[in-house]
Amino acid sequence: LHERPGLIAGLFFALYGVFRAFAEMFRDSDTVFFTGFSMGTALSIPLWLAAAYFIWRGLKAKAPA
Image (cartoon, rainbow, N blue to C red):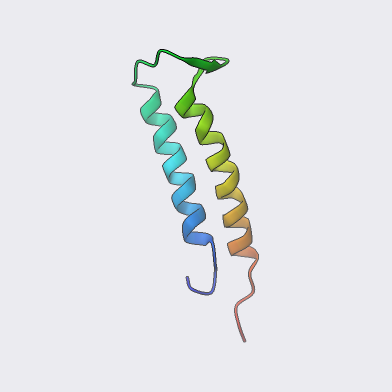
């Protein structure tokens, strides 16, 4: 994994965003931000984008010879 920089961070961001969005389904949020999303769910979207970038970058990295 040390040969794939960013992969673990990307996996953490992805899983944190998924579990955060899942937990938001059970909370009683006063603020509905966008088409039924709460603020916590809406803030998970940038996490998923960052996760996709870090995972892509980690998988694209070439292993040293």
